[in-house]
Length: 558
Image (cartoon, rainbow, N blue to C red; front, side, top):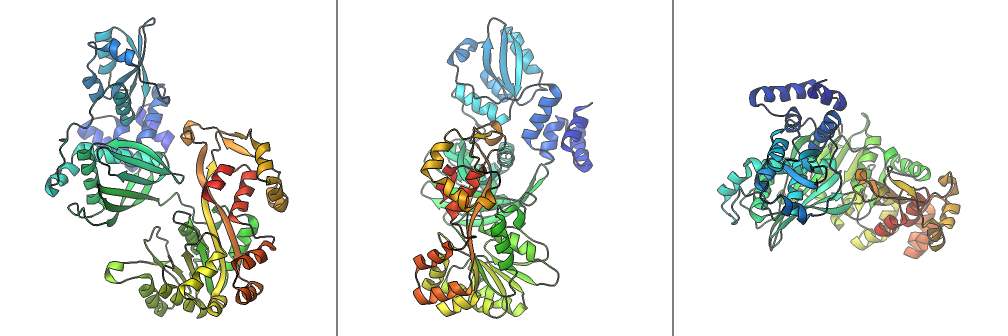
Protein backbone atom coordinates (compact mmCIF):
# COMPACT_ATOMS: atom_id res chain seq x y z
CA UNK A 1 0.00 0.00 0.00
CA UNK A 2 1.34 3.45 -0.93
CA UNK A 3 1.84 6.14 1.69
CA UNK A 4 -0.88 8.24 0.05
CA UNK A 5 -3.41 5.42 0.28
CA UNK A 6 -2.29 4.62 3.84
CA UNK A 7 -2.82 8.21 5.03
CA UNK A 8 -6.15 8.41 3.20
CA UNK A 9 -7.47 5.34 5.01
CA UNK A 10 -6.30 6.06 8.56
CA UNK A 11 -7.38 9.71 8.51
CA UNK A 12 -10.38 9.32 6.15
CA UNK A 13 -9.14 12.16 3.95
CA UNK A 14 -11.64 13.87 1.63
CA UNK A 15 -10.99 13.22 -2.07
CA UNK A 16 -10.78 16.94 -2.84
CA UNK A 17 -7.96 17.43 -0.29
CA UNK A 18 -6.08 14.46 -1.71
CA UNK A 19 -6.46 15.81 -5.24
CA UNK A 20 -5.09 19.22 -4.18
CA UNK A 21 -2.06 17.61 -2.51
CA UNK A 22 -1.36 15.32 -5.46
CA UNK A 23 -1.56 18.27 -7.87
CA UNK A 24 0.92 20.21 -5.72
CA UNK A 25 3.19 17.16 -5.67
CA UNK A 26 3.00 16.92 -9.46
CA UNK A 27 3.73 20.63 -9.93
CA UNK A 28 6.28 21.19 -7.18
CA UNK A 29 7.32 17.76 -5.92
CA UNK A 30 7.76 16.99 -2.24
CA UNK A 31 6.50 14.66 0.46
CA UNK A 32 2.77 13.91 0.21
CA UNK A 33 2.46 14.13 4.01
CA UNK A 34 3.83 17.68 4.12
CA UNK A 35 1.60 18.67 1.21
CA UNK A 36 -1.46 17.35 3.03
CA UNK A 37 -0.45 19.50 6.02
CA UNK A 38 -0.05 22.47 3.67
CA UNK A 39 -3.60 22.11 2.27
CA UNK A 40 -4.96 21.75 5.82
CA UNK A 41 -6.10 18.15 5.57
CA UNK A 42 -4.01 16.83 8.49
CA UNK A 43 -1.82 18.33 11.20
CA UNK A 44 1.94 17.91 11.32
CA UNK A 45 1.49 15.68 14.35
CA UNK A 46 -0.86 13.43 12.36
CA UNK A 47 1.67 13.37 9.51
CA UNK A 48 4.38 12.08 11.83
CA UNK A 49 2.07 9.52 13.48
CA UNK A 50 1.12 8.23 10.04
CA UNK A 51 4.76 8.04 8.93
CA UNK A 52 5.67 6.25 12.15
CA UNK A 53 3.03 3.57 11.51
CA UNK A 54 3.86 3.28 7.82
CA UNK A 55 7.67 3.23 8.07
CA UNK A 56 7.87 1.49 11.49
CA UNK A 57 9.98 4.34 12.88
CA UNK A 58 9.26 5.28 16.53
CA UNK A 59 8.09 8.73 17.54
CA UNK A 60 10.38 10.81 19.73
CA UNK A 61 8.68 11.09 23.11
CA UNK A 62 11.45 11.37 25.71
CA UNK A 63 13.32 14.39 26.93
CA UNK A 64 16.99 13.59 26.50
CA UNK A 65 19.34 15.50 28.82
CA UNK A 66 22.00 17.65 27.20
CA UNK A 67 25.03 15.44 26.44
CA UNK A 68 28.22 17.49 26.25
CA UNK A 69 30.26 14.39 25.53
CA UNK A 70 28.21 13.76 22.40
CA UNK A 71 29.03 17.20 21.03
CA UNK A 72 32.72 16.77 21.87
CA UNK A 73 32.79 13.31 20.32
CA UNK A 74 31.30 14.49 17.06
CA UNK A 75 33.23 17.76 16.88
CA UNK A 76 35.04 17.89 13.55
CA UNK A 77 33.14 14.87 12.18
CA UNK A 78 29.75 16.39 11.49
CA UNK A 79 28.66 19.86 10.40
CA UNK A 80 25.99 20.90 12.91
CA UNK A 81 24.74 23.72 10.72
CA UNK A 82 24.19 21.24 7.91
CA UNK A 83 22.40 18.83 10.27
CA UNK A 84 20.10 21.52 11.60
CA UNK A 85 19.34 22.81 8.09
CA UNK A 86 18.15 19.30 7.20
CA UNK A 87 16.18 18.91 10.47
CA UNK A 88 18.34 16.05 11.63
CA UNK A 89 20.10 15.95 14.98
CA UNK A 90 21.96 13.32 17.08
CA UNK A 91 20.47 12.15 20.37
CA UNK A 92 22.92 9.55 21.67
CA UNK A 93 25.78 7.38 20.49
CA UNK A 94 26.61 3.71 21.10
CA UNK A 95 30.34 3.21 20.44
CA UNK A 96 30.24 -0.54 21.03
CA UNK A 97 27.54 -1.19 18.45
CA UNK A 98 28.63 1.82 16.34
CA UNK A 99 25.11 3.23 16.22
CA UNK A 100 24.09 6.90 16.29
CA UNK A 101 20.51 7.57 17.48
CA UNK A 102 19.10 10.66 15.83
CA UNK A 103 15.84 12.56 15.53
CA UNK A 104 14.46 13.89 12.24
CA UNK A 105 11.33 15.45 10.83
CA UNK A 106 12.01 14.09 7.33
CA UNK A 107 12.57 10.31 7.21
CA UNK A 108 12.66 10.40 3.39
CA UNK A 109 15.88 12.43 3.37
CA UNK A 110 18.25 9.46 2.86
CA UNK A 111 21.21 11.78 2.38
CA UNK A 112 21.46 12.38 6.14
CA UNK A 113 22.05 8.75 7.24
CA UNK A 114 24.44 8.46 4.29
CA UNK A 115 26.25 11.60 5.48
CA UNK A 116 26.66 10.13 8.99
CA UNK A 117 27.92 6.79 7.66
CA UNK A 118 30.40 8.52 5.35
CA UNK A 119 31.80 10.92 7.95
CA UNK A 120 31.47 8.88 11.14
CA UNK A 121 31.28 5.28 10.00
CA UNK A 122 28.28 4.58 12.29
CA UNK A 123 24.81 3.30 11.38
CA UNK A 124 21.79 5.49 12.15
CA UNK A 125 18.65 4.70 14.19
CA UNK A 126 15.92 7.27 13.56
CA UNK A 127 13.11 8.74 15.64
CA UNK A 128 10.48 11.13 14.29
CA UNK A 129 9.67 14.58 15.67
CA UNK A 130 8.33 17.93 14.39
CA UNK A 131 10.81 20.43 12.99
CA UNK A 132 10.39 22.68 16.01
CA UNK A 133 11.32 19.84 18.38
CA UNK A 134 14.49 19.14 16.37
CA UNK A 135 15.40 22.83 16.60
CA UNK A 136 14.76 22.87 20.34
CA UNK A 137 17.01 19.84 20.83
CA UNK A 138 19.72 21.52 18.81
CA UNK A 139 19.55 24.57 21.04
CA UNK A 140 19.87 22.30 24.04
CA UNK A 141 23.14 20.84 22.78
CA UNK A 142 24.67 23.90 21.20
CA UNK A 143 24.26 27.64 21.33
CA UNK A 144 22.70 27.68 17.88
CA UNK A 145 21.15 30.94 16.79
CA UNK A 146 17.95 30.12 14.96
CA UNK A 147 16.00 32.13 12.43
CA UNK A 148 19.09 33.97 11.11
CA UNK A 149 17.22 35.04 8.00
CA UNK A 150 16.07 38.14 9.86
CA UNK A 151 18.47 40.83 11.03
CA UNK A 152 18.73 41.07 14.80
CA UNK A 153 18.17 44.79 14.78
CA UNK A 154 14.60 45.89 15.44
CA UNK A 155 13.01 47.27 12.31
CA UNK A 156 10.15 49.65 12.99
CA UNK A 157 9.39 50.59 9.38
CA UNK A 158 5.86 49.42 8.52
CA UNK A 159 6.72 48.47 4.93
CA UNK A 160 9.70 46.42 6.08
CA UNK A 161 7.57 44.66 8.70
CA UNK A 162 4.99 43.92 6.03
CA UNK A 163 7.68 42.36 3.82
CA UNK A 164 8.97 40.28 6.74
CA UNK A 165 5.42 39.09 7.45
CA UNK A 166 5.33 37.44 4.03
CA UNK A 167 8.69 35.67 4.48
CA UNK A 168 8.31 31.90 4.20
CA UNK A 169 9.85 31.18 7.66
CA UNK A 170 7.33 33.52 9.33
CA UNK A 171 4.39 31.91 7.54
CA UNK A 172 5.72 28.43 8.35
CA UNK A 173 6.22 29.29 12.02
CA UNK A 174 2.71 30.71 12.47
CA UNK A 175 1.12 27.75 10.67
CA UNK A 176 3.16 25.38 12.83
CA UNK A 177 2.15 27.30 15.97
CA UNK A 178 -1.56 27.02 15.12
CA UNK A 179 -1.15 23.32 14.33
CA UNK A 180 0.57 22.73 17.65
CA UNK A 181 -2.12 24.69 19.52
CA UNK A 182 -4.83 22.51 17.99
CA UNK A 183 -2.95 19.30 18.76
CA UNK A 184 -2.45 20.40 22.39
CA UNK A 185 -6.12 21.44 22.70
CA UNK A 186 -5.23 25.05 23.49
CA UNK A 187 -7.98 27.64 23.88
CA UNK A 188 -5.68 30.69 23.66
CA UNK A 189 -2.24 31.58 22.34
CA UNK A 190 -0.44 34.31 24.31
CA UNK A 191 2.45 36.15 22.63
CA UNK A 192 4.07 38.36 25.24
CA UNK A 193 6.66 41.03 24.65
CA UNK A 194 9.63 41.20 27.03
CA UNK A 195 12.86 43.19 27.22
CA UNK A 196 15.02 40.69 25.28
CA UNK A 197 13.32 37.38 24.53
CA UNK A 198 9.61 37.26 23.77
CA UNK A 199 7.64 34.26 24.91
CA UNK A 200 4.77 32.23 23.51
CA UNK A 201 2.35 30.46 25.87
CA UNK A 202 -0.70 28.23 25.38
CA UNK A 203 -3.70 28.14 27.69
CA UNK A 204 -4.64 24.47 27.96
CA UNK A 205 -7.57 23.43 30.13
CA UNK A 206 -7.47 26.87 31.74
CA UNK A 207 -3.74 26.78 32.68
CA UNK A 208 -0.93 28.65 30.87
CA UNK A 209 2.09 26.66 29.62
CA UNK A 210 5.36 28.05 28.19
CA UNK A 211 5.84 26.91 24.59
CA UNK A 212 8.58 28.96 22.94
CA UNK A 213 10.77 32.07 23.07
CA UNK A 214 11.37 34.34 20.06
CA UNK A 215 14.05 36.81 19.08
CA UNK A 216 12.77 40.37 18.93
CA UNK A 217 12.95 40.87 15.16
CA UNK A 218 11.28 37.53 14.46
CA UNK A 219 8.60 38.28 17.08
CA UNK A 220 7.79 41.57 15.32
CA UNK A 221 7.47 39.75 12.00
CA UNK A 222 5.11 37.13 13.46
CA UNK A 223 2.97 39.81 15.16
CA UNK A 224 2.79 41.73 11.87
CA UNK A 225 1.68 38.55 10.11
CA UNK A 226 -1.11 38.04 12.65
CA UNK A 227 -2.21 41.68 12.36
CA UNK A 228 -2.38 41.43 8.58
CA UNK A 229 -4.51 38.27 8.77
CA UNK A 230 -6.84 39.98 11.26
CA UNK A 231 -7.00 43.14 9.08
CA UNK A 232 -5.42 45.34 11.76
CA UNK A 233 -3.13 48.31 11.28
CA UNK A 234 0.43 46.96 11.51
CA UNK A 235 1.85 50.46 11.94
CA UNK A 236 -0.33 51.21 15.00
CA UNK A 237 1.49 50.09 18.17
CA UNK A 238 0.22 52.71 20.65
CA UNK A 239 -3.43 51.62 20.92
CA UNK A 240 -5.14 48.27 21.56
CA UNK A 241 -6.70 46.65 18.49
CA UNK A 242 -9.18 43.82 18.01
CA UNK A 243 -9.80 41.70 14.95
CA UNK A 244 -10.42 38.18 13.76
CA UNK A 245 -9.71 35.73 10.96
CA UNK A 246 -10.69 32.18 10.08
CA UNK A 247 -8.57 29.23 9.06
CA UNK A 248 -8.63 25.47 8.74
CA UNK A 249 -6.32 23.14 10.64
CA UNK A 250 -6.61 19.55 9.44
CA UNK A 251 -10.35 18.90 9.36
CA UNK A 252 -11.17 21.61 11.92
CA UNK A 253 -12.46 25.07 11.04
CA UNK A 254 -11.32 27.77 13.46
CA UNK A 255 -12.47 31.31 14.09
CA UNK A 256 -9.53 33.12 15.66
CA UNK A 257 -10.15 36.29 17.65
CA UNK A 258 -7.09 38.56 17.87
CA UNK A 259 -6.44 41.20 20.50
CA UNK A 260 -3.32 43.39 20.71
CA UNK A 261 -2.22 45.40 23.73
CA UNK A 262 0.63 47.94 23.93
CA UNK A 263 3.02 47.47 26.88
CA UNK A 264 6.27 49.14 27.91
CA UNK A 265 8.22 46.35 26.18
CA UNK A 266 6.15 46.28 22.99
CA UNK A 267 2.92 44.74 21.76
CA UNK A 268 1.35 41.67 23.35
CA UNK A 269 -1.04 39.57 21.29
CA UNK A 270 -3.66 37.05 22.39
CA UNK A 271 -5.32 34.68 19.94
CA UNK A 272 -8.57 33.07 21.12
CA UNK A 273 -9.19 29.82 19.21
CA UNK A 274 -12.86 29.12 18.65
CA UNK A 275 -13.46 25.59 17.40
CA UNK A 276 -16.67 25.52 15.37
CA UNK A 277 -17.14 21.75 15.42
CA UNK A 278 -15.72 20.91 18.85
CA UNK A 279 -18.15 22.81 21.06
CA UNK A 280 -21.25 20.83 22.04
CA UNK A 281 -23.87 23.51 22.63
CA UNK A 282 -26.22 21.26 24.54
CA UNK A 283 -27.30 21.24 28.18
CA UNK A 284 -26.60 17.50 28.27
CA UNK A 285 -22.86 18.15 27.88
CA UNK A 286 -22.39 20.93 30.44
CA UNK A 287 -21.82 18.62 33.42
CA UNK A 288 -25.08 19.49 35.21
CA UNK A 289 -26.15 16.92 37.75
CA UNK A 290 -29.64 15.48 37.11
CA UNK A 291 -31.34 17.64 39.76
CA UNK A 292 -29.57 20.78 38.48
CA UNK A 293 -30.42 20.02 34.87
CA UNK A 294 -34.09 19.55 35.71
CA UNK A 295 -34.12 22.89 37.50
CA UNK A 296 -32.28 24.69 34.66
CA UNK A 297 -34.70 23.32 32.05
CA UNK A 298 -37.64 24.46 34.16
CA UNK A 299 -36.23 27.98 34.51
CA UNK A 300 -35.56 28.53 30.82
CA UNK A 301 -39.04 27.20 30.10
CA UNK A 302 -40.53 30.39 31.61
CA UNK A 303 -42.46 32.52 29.13
CA UNK A 304 -40.97 35.70 30.59
CA UNK A 305 -38.52 36.85 33.27
CA UNK A 306 -34.76 37.11 33.67
CA UNK A 307 -32.25 34.29 34.21
CA UNK A 308 -28.71 35.21 35.25
CA UNK A 309 -25.53 33.19 34.78
CA UNK A 310 -22.70 34.44 37.00
CA UNK A 311 -19.00 33.81 37.39
CA UNK A 312 -15.60 35.33 36.59
CA UNK A 313 -14.14 35.70 33.08
CA UNK A 314 -13.37 32.30 31.55
CA UNK A 315 -15.83 30.36 33.73
CA UNK A 316 -17.89 29.08 30.79
CA UNK A 317 -20.86 31.45 31.08
CA UNK A 318 -21.09 32.04 27.33
CA UNK A 319 -21.11 28.31 26.54
CA UNK A 320 -23.90 27.77 29.09
CA UNK A 321 -25.98 30.58 27.59
CA UNK A 322 -25.47 29.26 24.04
CA UNK A 323 -26.52 25.80 25.22
CA UNK A 324 -29.72 27.26 26.66
CA UNK A 325 -30.42 29.16 23.44
CA UNK A 326 -29.85 26.00 21.38
CA UNK A 327 -32.55 24.24 23.41
CA UNK A 328 -34.90 27.26 23.07
CA UNK A 329 -34.24 27.75 19.33
CA UNK A 330 -37.50 26.81 17.59
CA UNK A 331 -39.06 28.17 14.39
CA UNK A 332 -41.99 29.66 16.32
CA UNK A 333 -39.69 31.87 18.45
CA UNK A 334 -37.66 34.95 17.60
CA UNK A 335 -34.34 35.10 19.47
CA UNK A 336 -32.01 38.13 19.39
CA UNK A 337 -28.64 38.34 21.13
CA UNK A 338 -26.37 41.26 21.97
CA UNK A 339 -22.79 40.10 22.46
CA UNK A 340 -19.26 41.42 22.81
CA UNK A 341 -17.96 39.60 20.87
CA UNK A 342 -20.14 37.10 18.98
CA UNK A 343 -18.16 33.92 19.66
CA UNK A 344 -20.31 31.29 17.94
CA UNK A 345 -22.82 31.85 15.16
CA UNK A 346 -26.04 29.84 15.62
CA UNK A 347 -28.40 29.31 12.72
CA UNK A 348 -31.86 30.72 13.31
CA UNK A 349 -30.73 33.30 15.89
CA UNK A 350 -30.24 37.02 15.22
CA UNK A 351 -26.89 37.98 16.75
CA UNK A 352 -25.67 41.55 17.22
CA UNK A 353 -22.05 42.56 17.80
CA UNK A 354 -21.54 45.44 20.25
CA UNK A 355 -19.64 48.35 18.67
CA UNK A 356 -18.85 50.90 21.38
CA UNK A 357 -16.76 52.98 18.95
CA UNK A 358 -19.90 53.93 17.01
CA UNK A 359 -22.24 54.10 20.00
CA UNK A 360 -23.73 50.60 19.71
CA UNK A 361 -23.52 49.64 23.39
CA UNK A 362 -25.47 46.90 25.19
CA UNK A 363 -28.06 49.44 26.34
CA UNK A 364 -28.42 51.10 22.93
CA UNK A 365 -28.79 47.77 21.12
CA UNK A 366 -31.26 46.49 23.72
CA UNK A 367 -33.49 49.53 23.29
CA UNK A 368 -33.61 48.96 19.53
CA UNK A 369 -34.21 45.22 19.47
CA UNK A 370 -37.28 45.47 21.71
CA UNK A 371 -38.99 47.12 18.71
CA UNK A 372 -38.28 43.97 16.68
CA UNK A 373 -40.75 41.85 18.65
CA UNK A 374 -38.38 39.22 20.09
CA UNK A 375 -39.54 36.34 22.29
CA UNK A 376 -36.15 35.70 23.86
CA UNK A 377 -33.29 38.16 24.36
CA UNK A 378 -29.72 37.39 25.35
CA UNK A 379 -27.68 40.27 26.79
CA UNK A 380 -24.02 39.23 26.81
CA UNK A 381 -23.23 41.04 30.05
CA UNK A 382 -24.92 43.45 32.45
CA UNK A 383 -22.18 46.03 32.99
CA UNK A 384 -24.03 49.12 34.17
CA UNK A 385 -27.28 50.42 35.64
CA UNK A 386 -28.77 51.39 32.27
CA UNK A 387 -28.35 47.90 30.79
CA UNK A 388 -29.70 46.33 34.01
CA UNK A 389 -32.79 48.57 34.00
CA UNK A 390 -33.66 47.89 30.35
CA UNK A 391 -33.11 44.14 30.88
CA UNK A 392 -35.46 44.16 33.89
CA UNK A 393 -38.10 46.13 31.95
CA UNK A 394 -37.80 43.69 29.05
CA UNK A 395 -38.32 40.75 31.42
CA UNK A 396 -41.41 42.44 32.86
CA UNK A 397 -42.98 43.09 29.44
CA UNK A 398 -43.24 39.50 28.30
CA UNK A 399 -39.68 38.62 27.18
CA UNK A 400 -37.40 35.90 28.48
CA UNK A 401 -34.05 37.60 29.12
CA UNK A 402 -30.81 35.66 29.59
CA UNK A 403 -27.72 37.50 30.75
CA UNK A 404 -24.46 37.29 32.71
CA UNK A 405 -23.13 39.08 35.76
CA UNK A 406 -19.79 39.07 37.54
CA UNK A 407 -20.33 37.81 41.11
CA UNK A 408 -18.61 35.16 43.21
CA UNK A 409 -21.71 33.05 43.85
CA UNK A 410 -25.38 32.82 42.92
CA UNK A 411 -27.07 34.54 45.93
CA UNK A 412 -24.77 37.58 45.66
CA UNK A 413 -26.28 38.43 42.26
CA UNK A 414 -29.42 39.89 43.85
CA UNK A 415 -27.44 42.28 46.00
CA UNK A 416 -25.16 43.22 43.10
CA UNK A 417 -28.17 44.36 41.06
CA UNK A 418 -29.52 46.34 44.01
CA UNK A 419 -26.11 48.03 44.32
CA UNK A 420 -26.40 48.98 40.62
CA UNK A 421 -29.59 50.87 41.46
CA UNK A 422 -32.32 48.35 40.62
CA UNK A 423 -35.36 48.60 42.90
CA UNK A 424 -35.88 45.45 44.95
CA UNK A 425 -39.58 45.15 44.03
CA UNK A 426 -38.69 45.26 40.31
CA UNK A 427 -36.02 42.62 40.81
CA UNK A 428 -38.49 40.38 42.63
CA UNK A 429 -41.00 40.73 39.81
CA UNK A 430 -38.51 40.00 37.01
CA UNK A 431 -35.98 37.44 38.27
CA UNK A 432 -36.61 33.76 37.48
CA UNK A 433 -33.40 32.23 38.80
CA UNK A 434 -29.62 32.46 39.09
CA UNK A 435 -26.86 30.07 38.08
CA UNK A 436 -23.21 30.40 39.16
CA UNK A 437 -20.45 28.27 37.67
CA UNK A 438 -16.74 27.57 37.46
CA UNK A 439 -14.59 25.50 35.11
CA UNK A 440 -12.08 22.97 36.40
CA UNK A 441 -9.85 20.35 34.82
CA UNK A 442 -10.99 16.77 34.39
CA UNK A 443 -8.84 13.77 35.36
CA UNK A 444 -7.05 12.25 32.38
CA UNK A 445 -9.01 9.10 31.41
CA UNK A 446 -5.83 7.39 30.17
CA UNK A 447 -3.67 7.64 33.29
CA UNK A 448 -6.09 8.10 36.22
CA UNK A 449 -5.53 5.73 39.11
CA UNK A 450 -6.98 5.41 42.64
CA UNK A 451 -5.64 8.30 44.76
CA UNK A 452 -3.16 6.97 47.37
CA UNK A 453 -4.04 9.87 49.68
CA UNK A 454 -7.77 9.17 49.56
CA UNK A 455 -8.22 8.28 53.24
CA UNK A 456 -6.51 11.45 54.43
CA UNK A 457 -8.64 13.57 52.09
CA UNK A 458 -11.82 11.89 53.26
CA UNK A 459 -11.00 12.79 56.87
CA UNK A 460 -9.64 16.30 56.30
CA UNK A 461 -12.41 17.58 54.03
CA UNK A 462 -15.32 15.52 55.40
CA UNK A 463 -16.08 14.07 51.99
CA UNK A 464 -18.29 11.49 53.65
CA UNK A 465 -20.68 14.30 54.69
CA UNK A 466 -21.04 15.49 51.10
CA UNK A 467 -21.43 11.90 49.92
CA UNK A 468 -24.20 11.36 52.47
CA UNK A 469 -26.03 14.53 51.37
CA UNK A 470 -25.66 13.67 47.67
CA UNK A 471 -25.94 9.89 47.98
CA UNK A 472 -28.74 9.76 45.42
CA UNK A 473 -26.38 11.33 42.88
CA UNK A 474 -23.20 9.45 43.78
CA UNK A 475 -24.17 6.03 42.51
CA UNK A 476 -21.37 3.53 43.27
CA UNK A 477 -19.98 5.41 46.26
CA UNK A 478 -16.73 7.31 46.79
CA UNK A 479 -13.99 6.60 44.25
CA UNK A 480 -11.16 9.15 44.45
CA UNK A 481 -8.91 9.19 41.38
CA UNK A 482 -5.79 11.13 40.34
CA UNK A 483 -4.05 11.34 36.97
CA UNK A 484 -0.45 10.09 37.00
CA UNK A 485 0.67 12.06 33.94
CA UNK A 486 1.11 10.61 30.44
CA UNK A 487 1.89 11.84 26.89
CA UNK A 488 -1.83 12.25 26.10
CA UNK A 489 -2.32 14.78 28.90
CA UNK A 490 1.11 16.41 28.57
CA UNK A 491 2.21 14.98 31.91
CA UNK A 492 -0.31 17.08 33.87
CA UNK A 493 -2.71 14.29 34.89
CA UNK A 494 -5.63 16.29 33.49
CA UNK A 495 -7.29 16.21 30.09
CA UNK A 496 -10.36 18.26 29.22
CA UNK A 497 -12.55 20.41 31.46
CA UNK A 498 -15.88 20.26 33.22
CA UNK A 499 -18.16 22.70 35.00
CA UNK A 500 -19.47 22.87 38.54
CA UNK A 501 -22.68 24.74 39.34
CA UNK A 502 -24.61 26.56 42.03
CA UNK A 503 -28.19 27.45 41.10
CA UNK A 504 -31.63 28.20 42.44
CA UNK A 505 -35.03 29.26 41.15
CA UNK A 506 -36.24 32.50 42.68
CA UNK A 507 -39.53 31.41 44.25
CA UNK A 508 -42.07 33.37 46.30
CA UNK A 509 -40.63 32.37 49.68
CA UNK A 510 -37.20 33.70 48.70
CA UNK A 511 -38.73 36.91 47.34
CA UNK A 512 -40.53 37.53 50.63
CA UNK A 513 -37.36 36.84 52.62
CA UNK A 514 -35.29 39.12 50.38
CA UNK A 515 -37.70 42.06 50.82
CA UNK A 516 -38.03 41.50 54.58
CA UNK A 517 -34.40 41.00 55.63
CA UNK A 518 -32.16 42.08 52.71
CA UNK A 519 -29.49 39.82 54.17
CA UNK A 520 -27.13 37.63 52.15
CA UNK A 521 -26.66 35.25 55.07
CA UNK A 522 -30.41 34.89 55.54
CA UNK A 523 -30.80 34.10 51.82
CA UNK A 524 -28.02 31.51 51.97
CA UNK A 525 -29.58 29.94 55.05
CA UNK A 526 -32.92 29.54 53.27
CA UNK A 527 -31.24 28.04 50.21
CA UNK A 528 -29.38 25.51 52.37
CA UNK A 529 -32.73 23.98 53.28
CA UNK A 530 -33.31 23.04 49.64
CA UNK A 531 -32.19 19.51 48.67
CA UNK A 532 -31.10 20.65 45.18
CA UNK A 533 -29.00 23.58 46.37
CA UNK A 534 -25.26 23.00 46.65
CA UNK A 535 -22.46 25.49 46.94
CA UNK A 536 -19.94 25.48 44.10
CA UNK A 537 -17.40 23.72 46.28
CA UNK A 538 -19.92 21.03 47.26
CA UNK A 539 -20.79 20.35 43.62
CA UNK A 540 -17.05 20.10 42.95
CA UNK A 541 -16.53 17.69 45.86
CA UNK A 542 -19.36 15.54 44.48
CA UNK A 543 -17.38 15.23 41.24
CA UNK A 544 -14.20 14.51 43.24
CA UNK A 545 -16.00 11.70 45.07
CA UNK A 546 -17.04 10.31 41.69
CA UNK A 547 -13.39 10.30 40.47
CA UNK A 548 -13.93 12.92 37.74
CA UNK A 549 -11.45 15.47 39.11
CA UNK A 550 -9.24 16.15 42.12
CA UNK A 551 -9.76 18.15 45.27
CA UNK A 552 -6.77 20.32 44.27
CA UNK A 553 -8.73 21.50 41.24
CA UNK A 554 -11.84 22.28 43.25
CA UNK A 555 -9.86 24.30 45.79
CA UNK A 556 -8.06 26.11 42.95
CA UNK A 557 -11.23 27.52 41.41
CA UNK A 558 -13.45 28.06 44.46
